[in-house]
Length: 418
Ligand SMILES: Cc1cc2nc3c(=O)[nH]c(=O)nc-3n(C[C@H](O)[C@H](O)[C@H](O)COP(=O)(O)OP(=O)(O)OC[C@H]3O[C@@H](n4cnc5c(N)ncnc54)[C@H](O)[C@@H]3O)c2cc1C
Picture (cartoon, rainbow, N blue to C red):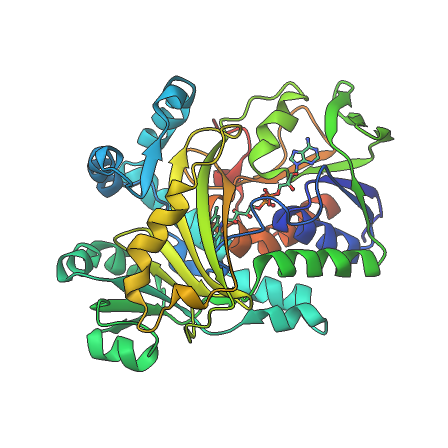
C-alpha cells in the first residue's frame, strides 16, 4: 500500500526529471526545483548513448593507472588536469587509486552490472505512448578501434564483459563498413553492442520528459537552493532564491553540485567533476546509423537530429573553472577522419559546449539514503553514464521513497561511502 507524499527534487537534469516522473506516477505530489531550465547543464550536450550492461566495467582499473601518466603529459590528450586544481583534487584521486585494484574493480563491476541491467527498459516505461519515444532509437553502439594494437589491448575487457554475459558482435574492417557505411577505412575493428539505444537529441529528451512530467501534474520551479534547514533527523525547509519552501520528502539530484547541496546539510561527499566537451556541425548529415566511441582516443561521434556531434574528453579542473574550448576542437581534429564523407563546410552553424559529469572516485553513483536523515534520498554521481542510468535510477528512488524493495542490493551505491 503506497502512501502519498509531497516530494521535492533538487535538479532538473535528466536524472532529476526521470526521478520526478517516476515519483509522480507513484502517486506523489512532486516539485522539481532548478536554478536553470530542464536539461540546461550536463544533460544538454552528451553523446546520446543509452548504454546497457556493456558499460559495466568502471573506469578505475590497473590498466588506466598505467596509462594515466602518459595521457596527462600528452599535449591535447584525452585526459587533462589543471595543475592549479591538483591539491583540491588529491582526496578524489586517492579514492580513484583505491578503486583501481582488480579486486575492487570486479566487485564494483558486478554491482554496476546489476544497476545497468534494465536501463533501456526503464526508458521504454517512461516514454511509452508519448512523443518522447520517437527521440530514442534502437540501433546499438560501436566501440571502434583504429589500430590492431588498440584492438588487441581491449581483449581483456572483452573477455570480462563476455564472462558477465554481455552480448557483443566483433567486426573486422570489412564488416564495419557493411554495418556502418558512413565510416572510413580508418576504423580497423569494432565491437557492436547491439543492446544499447541512443537518443537523437539528449536536450530534447530531457525537455520532453520534463514537459511530460508537467502535463501529468508535476510542478517545475526555477530557483536556486541556497540553504537546507534540518532538525535532528529530517530536512524541514529549503531556502531558495525565490523564498523558503517546506519539505516533506527530498531527493537530491543536483548533478555536479550535489556535494554542495549535501554540505548545506552538514554532509561531506567526495564528488568531483569530469568536464567534457562537444562540437556540433549543424545541418551536416554524415549518414551514421548509430553512435560510436573511439576506444583509443576516448571520444564519441553521433548523428543527432540537428547535425553531427563530436563529444568527449575528460578535464579535471573543478566545477567553477572557465571552459577551455580548445578541447572541443581537439575531438574534431581526431575524429573527422573516421567519417567517409564529412564536409564541415556544409555546416549552417558550428557550436561548442562544455558539460560537467558528476563523478565519485569509484565511478559508481550515489543512490539511497544516509544515516541521520529519514526523509532524504540521493541520486547523483552518474559520471559518463548519467543519460543511460537516469530512468533506471529514478525508478529505484521511487521504490525507496515508497518503501518498496528495488530488487537489487544498493550497498555499493551508499552516498556516504567515502
Ligand atoms: C561530453 C559528454 C558526453 C557524454 N555522453 C554520454 C552518453 O553518451 N551517455 C550517457 O549516459 N551519459 C553521457 N554523458 C554523461 C551525462 O551527460 C551526465 O552523467 C548526466 O547529464 C548527468 O545528469 P544530471 O541530471 O545528474 O546532471 P545535470 O544535467 O548537470 O543536472 C543537474 C541540475 O542540478 C541543478 N542544480 C545544482 N545545484 C542546484 C541548486 N543549489 N539549486 C537548484 N538547482 C541546482 C543544476 O542547475 C542542473 O540543472 C556525457 C557527458 C559529457 C560531458
